[in-house]
Length: 468
Image (tube, rainbow, N blue to C red; front, side):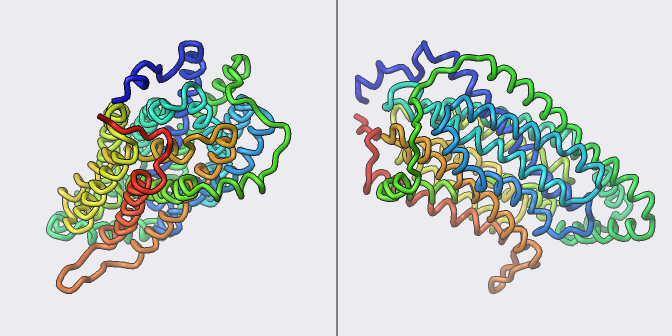
């Protein structure tokens, strides 16, 4: 390994306090991401008339907010400062979370995606600001390692979000109790395929809604309040963090520009293959991550026959693996190039997803959980490779990478449509619709592996160093 690189600190001491404070933002948006993922299935249970595609609008709105606000956020922070971007992001985050209070009062599904849409305006500002801010806090040679270190705290927030979703939302929902009661009342379900049982319980829920409308409305109101409460709490917490950043003096590393020429900058950026192919790779990565974490519950319920709260425990296990792997990968980046690790882990992830598709049982579920160990490296590494050597243009260049989070909006909708389609038949093999839908993240990991290969053999970012 290059001896010079060993002597360069990942984070200079003078910037350590600011680095730690900005790193807390990674945990905050991780919490929002992963308390929201299980709601796709939860809302389908709470609103029995919703299809899988319709309930997936939770993710469509959540990640659509990133796409809407990524470019405006980049222009804003370039005109003003990183701190201003963080403050506006926190304000929008808190506002969107607190909108869950009136949304629950309306008892209309549409208001929940709208609340999340506003919330992710804030997350777009935070991610567009925090990622290049972290990259700028030190030497360019350690930028990817520094971002991986900061991103390691993202799954801590995600894990907290998953635990809250499992213990304070899913386990307390009346619809969860209804499902468990139905299974206990029908011992014959033990002889049926989990996918068939899932359909029968959905029919029973719809029948209860139609025959006992007042009771159903009362239970639905209670469930919506259970969903509302954690969002109201996080809204208050984010407002408190806003105050901390308001009074904290932050370094103006990287500076800001008064003159903004976005079209000229865009032409320059699209002349850098490392960047625009990175945007594509990031879009496919986010699509893969969100679908693997969103539909693990569907997979566990349909193919294994687990309850919704038990299924969420596998999401928690996946996040624990993701968290540990993030620190392991940060360490490995001292000895292996980002491109090599990215390509290798993408290919391993693709192999695991093949197991998810074709095993269709508990082993397939374990493969799906294991995919998270491969994914932990991907987002910050693609980000670091794509922005390598950007300097001042990193603010607008990072907006393209945040815009790429729109991959988390369109792919869940497509997977939800595939699940609504019904079983798929390949010759003598029958794939449940949930299993077959994982062909989409399979394609994503192949695309990411290609980007890793290109990093090594085509454009070779300047921060890539040969290892002894």
